[in-house]
Each structure stands twice: as C-alpha cells, then as structure tokens.
Length: 265
Length: 112
Image 1: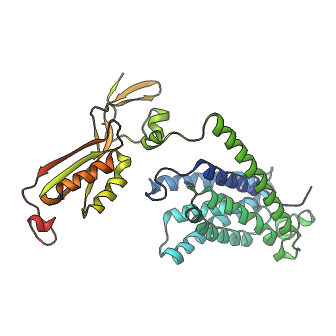
Image 2: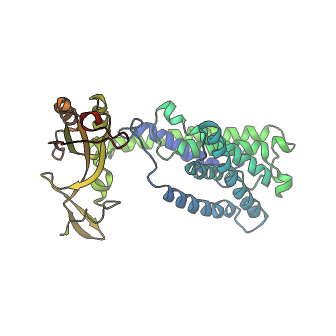
Image 3: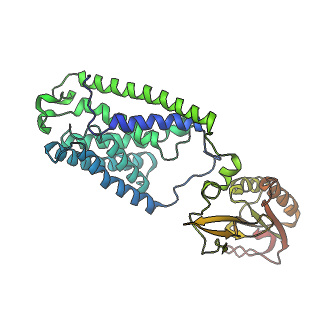
C-alpha cells in the first residue's frame, strides 16, 4: 500500500466525481442556447438555503470519517469550519479584485470550495493550515469556473471548477500542510513540506490523484458510451425546449397564480 | 405609428429579441402570459390526481414602431419565432394614436 492521505474522500469522491463530471459534460454536450443565452441562477435564497444544509451536513461527513468521537474528529471539525469560512473569503476577495464586487453566489460557492478542499486534509492539518487551504482553494476555484467558457464545455453546477479543482488543490496541499505533531498522529502520518517533511508525501498525493483521474475518466466514458448506444443520453431538441418538467414528469415547478391548473380530470 | 404585439414560445425570446435589434427596433416590453389556442393543453399529475392544464405559458412582446417599418418588423418577428409546429403564436398590429416619451415630453413619431 502506498502512503497517500485522504481523510474524508477528497480524491475518492471529489476528484473522482469532478473528472467524471467533466467527461460527462463533454460527452453529453451543451444545453441548447449555451453559452449565448443567459443562464442566471433563478433563486439566490434557495442557493443560500442549499449551501447552509450542505455546510451543516459536511461537519458530520468530515468529522464522522474519524469513526469515533476522538481527537481526530475534533481536529477535522475545526479544520472544516476554518477552511469553509476561509474558502468563502478567498472566493469573494478574488471576485473583488477581478470584477470589482463581492457577490452572494461567490460567497456560497467559495464556502463549498473550502469544504471540498479540506475534505481530504481535515484531520491532518492544524487550524492555520486549514485557513490557508480554504483561502487558496476559494481563490483558485473562483478562477477555475471560467474554464468552461474558455474550453467550451457546459458545466451547469460548476462541478469541475469547484469539486474537481477544489478536491485536487486540497489533496495536493496536504503535501505542504500535513502537521502530524499538532494533530496527534505522531509517527503514523508523514509531515508536509512546511512541517519538516520531505517531498515524498506531495509525490504520493500527486500519484493518487493521477490514478483516480485516469481510472474514473476512462470508466465514466465507458459507462456513458454504453448508455448512449442503449437508452440514449439526451432528450430530443423539442423536449429540451419545452422543458423536462412537462415532458418527463408531467408537472410544473412554479404555477402563475393558479392559472395553470385547468380542471381535475 | 403601429403597436405590434406578438405571442411567442418562451424559448424563442432570444431569437426574436435579436431579430428586432437587427430590424432597428430600439426597445421592447416582454410579459409572461398564459393562453389557450389550437395547441391545446397537457396533463399534469400530482399525487396520482391528474389535472388537465389548458393554459400554456407564452411570452408577449410589445413594440411601437413607425408606420413605414411596421411590415418589416412583423416579418422579422414571424421569421424568428417560427418553428413550423402548432403553438408558434400570433402577431397583431394596431394603430397608435399618440405616444409620449416621459423623460423629454416628445410626442408622436419623435418619441418612438
């Protein structure tokens, strides 16, 4: 067994899901009208409610990966809070420098980017390391979400920009910020470059992510290809224009003043 | 001056907007509306209860233009909004007696 570290699933979940999302976005193609037409978020309050639920749940996810209510769970809990807060800050600071304003959607996205990045690292870094990881991930992910426009793939939830890039950043930064002295691992865990360790851990992190990217990318492509030749991947053009609520689910998300309901049949 | 009102499929808004811009129309008003026509409605299901939904969501686009360009503007809208399938909507033209630009108080064709 090699010595890469991944406490709560940064590589096995986020990098894995992120590369799968990239392959799927490319194979599925763009939504009609993207990127010419505007695809604005339709409800900022719902974005914030979702972020809050995700944020709360993530504490259970990261700290719970300790498998016991012990010191490692405590370190993970603290790191998760520090990194997510710093992630929101990193994202909005970058926005302020780049676009001139702080945004609510940016803060919510940065919090998620911070959560993603600290996931693999949460029990191996001290609070200052967690803040550093969150800030770096928030800033980098706020830049990475524009990759889709540069390369022309349509990623509606920015899974590639936030989860793939955030997971990768967090996982690689363990190679710098792993601090077994302060987090109670002692000899069990290798120290990062900033805490007296060699480059060995960083190399292990790099190799683990590379293996995940290759395996998950190839498997996703194979699964999507199998679906495309059997069930089919996309709805037809008319169905997409009409909306899947009507075509696939026989319901409407928002009724205008009750007008839409005709009569019960 | 003519008022041109178009009822179109919602996803055609972008195309109609661009066509109007090319036709030299400087401003337009869009309203979300629902209506019933030959297209008919569809059935929705909520907890097993089926509802016949007669009213279909459409967009209403209103513009006021000079008499000389009215026909070409209508053509531009019709071309941009057409899919050839039932439910493409309608365009109608009505005379406008007078028009005021609120900011300057200009009246008539100058205010278009």
